[in-house]
Image (cartoon, rainbow, N blue to C red; front, side):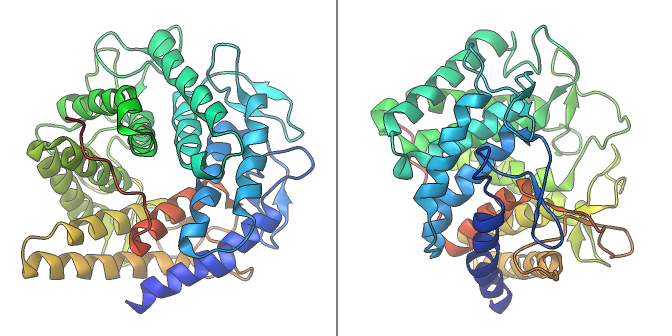
Length: 387
């Protein structure tokens, strides 16, 4: 699979060196949000989610063969974390470009990525015990301050609508990371968190008529009608499918594995534009194309989902089919990586196959790394369910 090798080489030899050199803010701390077309940083407010994502990226970079200063960059990111933390243990949304508080809302999505980054930072952290304490306090604050009376977590306090599936998807990802990073005897609260989110997804997020995960809900976890934003995103069908399959395998839940497979099949059959060869932005309630702009990140989730399907194949035909989808997904991704400045990438492709000229967002490096880890087989193995 030469395209897969090309992608991994690009990640190791071009992307990681560039973002290590240009994406790390050595003056004000943390990481720059975007890099311009010449590789220079764009001066923008800093979000907690990007801090967590970049900590993850450089925590995992050595496993891909990158020999740069990973531990230094990870600990640089950890040093920037206290500026984001509120007295209640949650992370505020963003700081200004010089590191001063700008918006102290504790967005649910941000909590997920801070937790995710911290889980992966443990092997390189200068003070692993402090990382565990911060994550534990954040998890407890979510339970104390944001627990929804039915299941999952509120978006805000006091509660506001819509409730969203997307932050829960990444909280599930973070909980699985912690359940794997900690010794089995210490991982119980994280396994419980993962269990509750997975059950919410299977019971409420997966539409019984279409089998698709919908995005937006009212206060009782009933799906809202189609609005201005897509209710069904192909990229999230791949991502939820990958995560629910992982959880189902960990917990011995065949129904979750089956639901995960259906989501991946739906993302492939309804959410990929045959003309461009890419997964596009959104579907309407009838599973017809809505948002046709194709961002980079759904391409990476498509790669991950089909690698997982290949590895779980029970017949030669299943494996061959999955391998074909992997090759197609990597082929869809590679044009995004062809830029004048090696290591940068395009983020959005229009309906005619052209790319929008804009700075490259640091947040997308997380998606690229998750796909690279799955392709290289370097993602930490999930712990089996505790007896």
